[in-house]
Image (cartoon, rainbow, N blue to C red; front, side, top):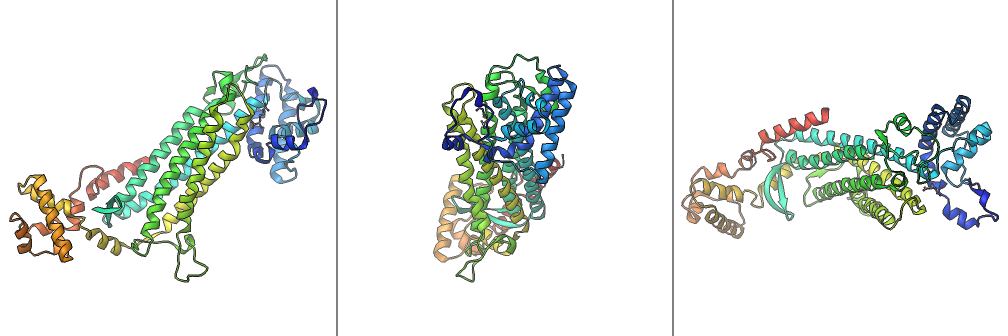
Length: 458
Ligand code: ARG
């Protein structure tokens, strides 16, 4: 047992209590941030005359040597300490003696851990944003290359209207673009420095909180010391945004799993991103897509866990908040792994364009266009809808498609049909006539791609 607060106690902590209370097995992840925060703190304290120049230099040199030793493996983060803060401080005192005992002046572990967690999370937000950017690159490239790769579009998982792969991928581009915007937004809101809040009521030392904030590239200090140590909103926001990313990935995975089925055969997964079966030699399973879909629940779990942990907490710090770490770290790791693997899987996946085009053509995906054709010839839309409905029934009965009927057959259902119906319901026309912004027609898609290309280039 190695703790910072023995003075008031006359009895040893029960070992099980100590273990239950300790956080070093997981908060050692905050090691780098803890050192960074301490360096900023003592730099400010020396500027304010609370620590001497020599004390500051000795503390910083000590902290840097601990960092070097941990990184090189010469010093192991020992789990006999209660938490990472105690480990660093005890080591510092070991190395530099009395000056080390002054490091914690004007600080509490409450504002220390609030700072460490914020610094760590800020880095994660940037990493996730970067991974999203990489994914968007792959999606946009596929869009650029597949402006006329036709495929069926669905509603209710029933064939609806034909579209293109570029258009379908474009939907995901917008989702992940919004996810990136959320990262940017979270960064703005979280970028205030809680250090200097002390345990909850600030300190009596003449801290320069704005200076500490500046040293760690925050936009400024937080404005209420109780909120500073009790706030984990930024984590909840980030976990909510991560959950949304996972929801998007999971939907995309679900589609890939469907496209990869024997019934669809729209895609061929790269061997490096699929797995076999121990019993069925023919199998090539989309395990990565399934796992990403599966891990979504885990990330949602972290969000719900944090919301629940925080909901009943009176101000200010409560030990419950130590529970923020494991679930958040797990969610960060999970999302980063999922984004990396999903991007790899997507960039190596091949499309069976022939199968996609055939599928786009059957299933009466051109029925809306056939109705629009009649409307253009003066038939009111509601009547046209009824006529095409009967036409579809006729085709189902004859096991054929609208474009395969003879003009005589068509005319029997409505005399309005002319020779130009065939062009009007061709796959190409169905897609290329949809030219309003956001629609799959090539010229509309090109405009959107140009906007998104520019967005990615900034
Ligand atoms: N391990 C603690 C946490 O993660 C650090 C803060 C401890 N503060 C305290 N008053 N016991 O929240």
